[in-house]
Length: 142
Image (cartoon, rainbow, N blue to C red; front, side, top):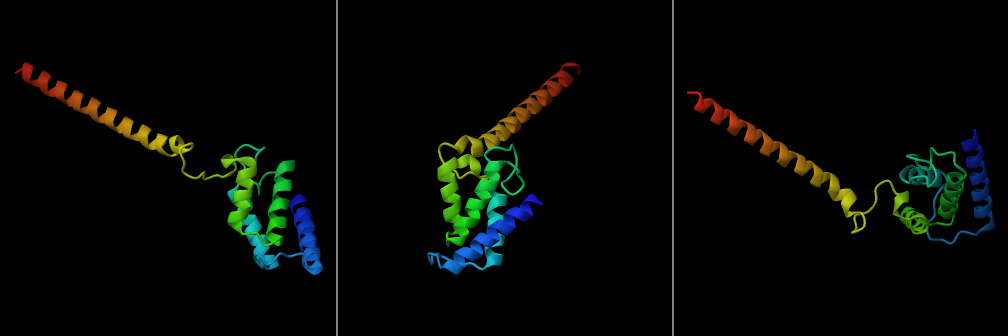
């Protein structure tokens, strides 16, 4: 119910903005495109207050404000990338579910790979050592 109220509010605001001619002309989206892009962006971004929830699913007050900001920026003709960059500038890289690769996030991307390779190498060495001991033990009894 809250989602529908927000959507109706945003749609009415967007209609009044279009009627007033306040569009900057950056991009011209239809109402369906605005709705689809807004939902897409809010699915891709993490809520700053809720743990493991995207903006679309979160019921936190900040999530409602950010969704309204996304729809407002779409009404103003901003692109999806510009909106995401604006929110990343404001809330940091943590708002994205898929942070970009940089020196600050390198351990997040490379850490699991390094850990997996270390486990495989250790397991391989232990298995080889075990086989070596089994062969040596078998020969010593003959």
